[in-house]
Image (cartoon, rainbow over all chains, first blue to last red; front, side):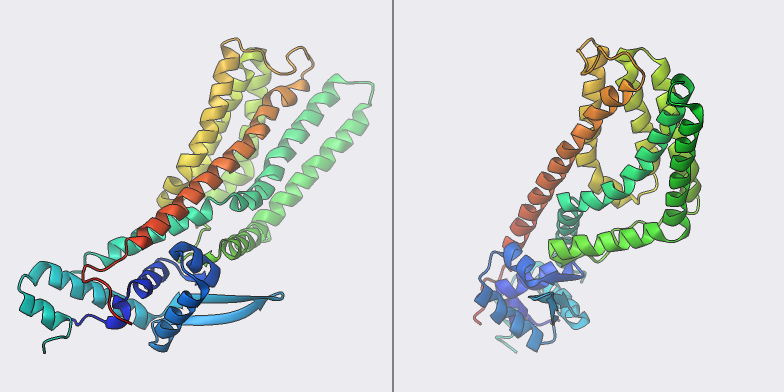
Length: 108
Length: 253
């Protein structure tokens, strides 16, 4: 049984990963607009995802304009799939609260 | 247990992002830059040859020289596009430009891979169809000329669209059908008796003005439809991602 990954369970980070799972790479400004976030909020969440190895961040200059792009890593894709699997397990087989608590890592 | 949420949502996100990128108005411009010379050169060549047979005062030698220059230019363009990798280079640059402009790079290539049969189709049949449609249109009555051109363009467009992969056809279809529909409406209206622009001009060269000007004027409408469709897809993407909240609720940071 899969455990719920608390890093992905946060809605903003889940949205970032879902967006990146559908494209090859996306620029900071695109993610910002698509998710309707603020600069600081997105920076903090992407940093956490990068620290976990779920996304890779590349910074470059296009002329004089800085360009930050994100892409999901293989590890991030796998973690996202496992997260949804865990959620599906709760949805289908988790009628009892005991089971749900176990999946969320509250009961071991 | 098989996951049911992630793949479906990921596919929806992928679909919305793809439609957002490939329908942006800027993505239409490089395609027009490539397509217009292929379309206009045979047109100009044929028109010049046609004039040379009718207008004796300019001199058949000069007209023949111009025709040969146009023909050589067309052959050079085709040679560069298809045999020197020019088309591939242009499309690759176009893809990079579009992705950079949109701020997102798609997983699947936007350039479709086509079979060997696409090259003779583009090299021989497409210009032949353009000239063929013009000849048939010249023979038709003035009021039916746009109808002939609409039929010809639809036939050529359908043949070209056969080269695209199925998903690309589906993504391009809604906005481009609008373009065809508008020109068909114009052609049917003219055939039904609507006064055409420059109808009083009886010379054959006015054919280009009468028939092609509405077609060219429809390009901005097509481009605007593409842009609106693209923006709608971006809003769809935003809505999809806004719904992305797990049933378990928010977790603390």
